[in-house]
Image (cartoon, rainbow, N blue to C red; front, top):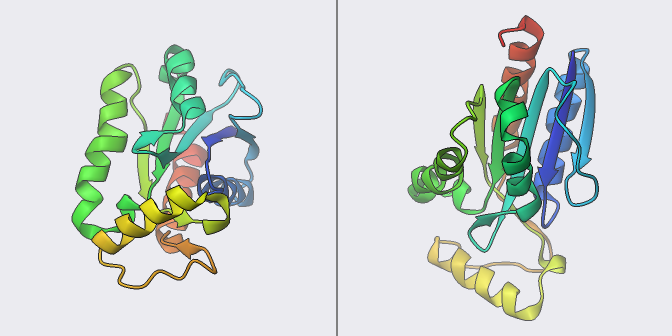
Amino acid sequence: MKALIAYGSNTGSTEEIGETIASKLRDRGMEVDLVDLKKKPIRPDGYDLVVVGSGIKMDKWIAEALNYLKENEESLSLRAHAIFVSSGYASEPSRREQSRVDYIDAVLEIYPKLNPVSTGLFGGLYNWKRYNFVVKRLVISLLKSMGHAHVDTSKPLDLRDWDKINAWAEELASFAIKGNH
């Protein structure tokens, strides 16, 4: 079994999620290629499972990840595929369903041939070192509106649920190994 994990990451959060998924699939005996779509576009041909992930920047998918779906919609529709998103909003229970609508459902509406075996919606990572002053202030304001009274910018704020991410990766591995595609 051969899998491709292709991602677009802005602050490294989506990349780390992709690495975790790749590790789980490898642990189950799969051959896995992990590809940063900003550095190396890759065709999905020849893979049994393709997982496409994106961070959310300014309320949108990373351009390279969205372009990947557009350019490979037909090929992806012919094989097992899954998509996931990493977003700070997804970590907030009150915004979770709207995040699913905005970041998963909306993309699947744009690309109707896609029928993922699974979708993942995960919290994000606020890596303050990667933000300029203006973006940092905007993100702090956003976090305060979501109930984070004090934001310590001396260290990253990780809102990802690693148990959930690992469980989703295991689900994908089980699906691929059983050959349910």
